[in-house]
Length: 489
Image (cartoon, rainbow, N blue to C red):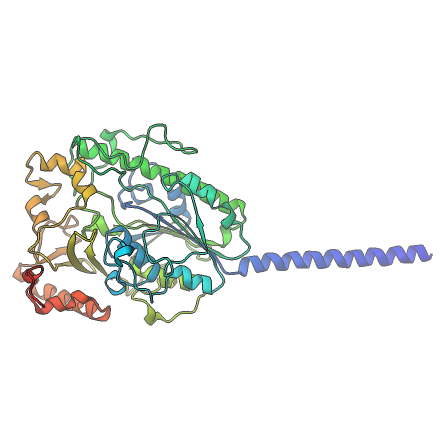
């Protein structure tokens, strides 16, 4: 009898333990679901909106990014603020325009061409709020103490599959994580030279390919040539190389998502895909024309309701830091940033109050001084070429591009839709109706019919420059032609 009672007591006690364990497991699962979300910010290098299946290109193979778009939200009007690598990346990570942080163009920290020491970046703010922060691939910002990450991972930045492999440990960390994943693709490959002039750049592609990557080679005859480029043999050959580099990115992205799923974090991780600036072709990168600054942006947020949605809000990379802070529940002062969070409108197709953006480009390399300021308001776009009397400066890789050389050496008068003289020698103001003139060919700034639009947008630009403490605001009261003449302004 005593044995029976003891057995019953043991069974009852065991049942209680099992129930307690089950309850503990449920609590664990619940805690996992309600803990801070992880964030992956995936940034490609010179990837234009033209080369993704989900943005309407039927030739290029990007199945993994297309899948992400079908499960998340695709932004139609996402913009960088400067079509130059370092300048754009500083904005992404600070939420401020480069002209206000010292990041005017390419970083050269040994000459203190870098972000001011007192700025606080996204990874630092997230670390202060309990996040493990890690980066891999292209960095291109300085100083390190401003853009500090807990962990720096190493891999070939041209092999996104290898990069994904290197991230496995971070994806499996117990802490919420912020992973800043930056490829070198599809940036043009070095060396940048024009001998022989008609040889296409390899865009990082190489004989034998990369370990773990199934290289996809494209037929130049089948690629899509954007209207701002000349449809020449050389252009097509370079676009084919560009596509191949992007398909390599896509494979690495797919591998990263596979590892995220295996780590059990896919339902608790916000994934953002963007590019720093437009494709590395003349008329895009280093310009403020649409191919240079209007970029892909895909966000997969498991905490949002809509999937496969399109958002037409005009957002900008200056908005990314406050948006990510919002997504992760970090309390911040909105006055600390020039951008604003778009977290609450991600699920909306046409949200109100999101129809204006600004851009600010000062130089690419230090020797390429050509400050431009931009406002886009609904369908109108105003560009102020502050140093307009100067010839537009070329980045070395774009000048050497066989795409450009094919026009230059043949003494062509046009480059794509644009007159070459108008491309090299620009008016002080360029005003375009993007609905009627998406190629930005017909400058309306001297058309009396658009005087009211021009004056209104000039005032908007002045207001933007004043609020963001743009040093070039002073040029509204001076003759731009005096720049570089040794005259004190």
